[in-house]
Amino acid sequence: MASTSIISMFLLPVILLIWVSPAVLSEKCSPHEKKILLQVKQEFGNPSMLSSWNASTDCCTSAWEGIECTTEKPYRVSQIELHGLDLPGPVDLPPSLFNLVDLDELLIFEMPNLKGQIPPQISNLKKLTVLYLFSTNISGPIPESLAQIKTLTNINLAGNNLSGPLPHLLPSLPSIRVIFADENRISGPIPDSYGSFASSLVTLTLSHNMLSGKIPAALKGLDAELLDLSWNKLEGDGSVLFGAEKKTEEITLAGNMLSFDIGKVEFGRNITRLNLKHNRIYGKLPEGLTKLQHLTRLNVSYNQLCGPIPQGGRLQGYFPIDASSFASNKCLCGPPLPPCK
Ligand SMILES: *[C@@H]1O[C@H](CO)[C@@H](O)[C@H](O)[C@H]1NC(C)=O
Ligand SMILES: *[C@@H]1O[C@H](CO)[C@@H](O)[C@H](O)[C@H]1NC(C)=O
Ligand SMILES: *[C@@H]1O[C@H](CO)[C@@H](O)[C@H](O)[C@H]1NC(C)=O
Ligand SMILES: *[C@@H]1O[C@H](CO)[C@@H](O)[C@H](O)[C@H]1NC(C)=O
Ligand SMILES: *[C@@H]1O[C@H](CO)[C@@H](O)[C@H](O)[C@H]1NC(C)=O
Image (cartoon, rainbow, N blue to C red):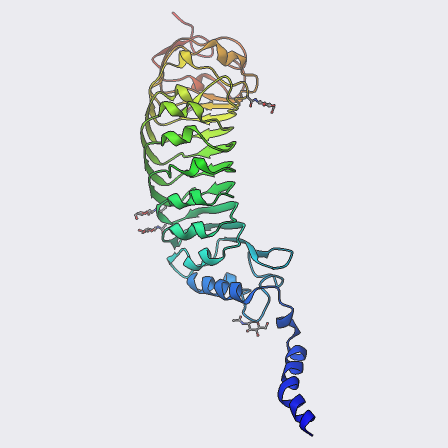
């Protein structure tokens, strides 16, 4: 009977385990990552919108809210997308998030009650390509360690309460294409390094911050399809941001204290939107403006421009470019403004 007792003592529990809980054994979610996610849930204050994050289900196949895993072994949590969570009150950005080292995309947004800082340990996420942390109340500096995540392509940190300087190493990222950081309290000058991105940058938006100081001459090398530096306290020569060879489509410098002669500016052919209003720009509008075939929006109002408005192209009679586009300058004249004297 010895063999029977061996079966009952050792094998039976094993057989029972396999029979009772096939779900556990075929689970894709790694126990380690499940534990981290449950910790993250707790750090978020157990919002009811995360009730699908349940220890007895598979985080990779059972529709855990906002979780996606890799589709091949070894299964790993690769994406987190959480927005509008019903946080119980002001809650810190969960530190455990930064232990999910295989994340490819981390998207957390529209949570006014989410506070705290972005920890330097974010650089643990060595595979991250997309980082969206926007419309929350996180504060403190943008960690310079972001520049260690060489895979990053898209960063959106807009609409938070971030302060301190722009990380001067971000332009060294080899694949970065999009940076949104508007509507924060970022201060100090734009670093020279922003004139030499290692990648082919598409979008840089820094509007509604507290950036100050002169536009560095090095920004001659800054070239993006969409560039928005509006509503800061920037000074100096903004003409370096333009160039006939640049791929600029939209450029918004409104609401700064930029002071330069617009007459010497050469515009890239692909410009569709040009917003320079509320600065201290002077000189005579260049004829080159009439050659911009794709121009759909133009506003140079509230500057110190003077002389006749070039005639032709889309500068007259092309809605919505109208007299208000040229209003409140020193002495601009001619259609669509009143005739020159
Ligand atoms: C987890 O799911 C099980 C089975 O669906 C359920 O009985 C249990 O109450 C859930 N636990 C939590 C904490 O929601
Ligand atoms: C940013 O922080 C300041 C002070 O810490 C606070 O007064 C303000 O309401 C915050 N802004 C947002 C959008 O939460
Ligand atoms: C954001 O956090 C600050 C403290 O850091 C607090 O004073 C402010 O009220 C918060 N804003 C919102 C909208 O919760
Ligand atoms: C302007 O746009 C065209 C068409 O999208 C593109 O082929 C060209 O490279 C752009 N010019 C520059 C200077 O980027
Ligand atoms: C140009 O900006 C001024 C000042 O902000 C505004 O009043 C006007 O409507 C704008 N015009 C156009 C065409 O955008």
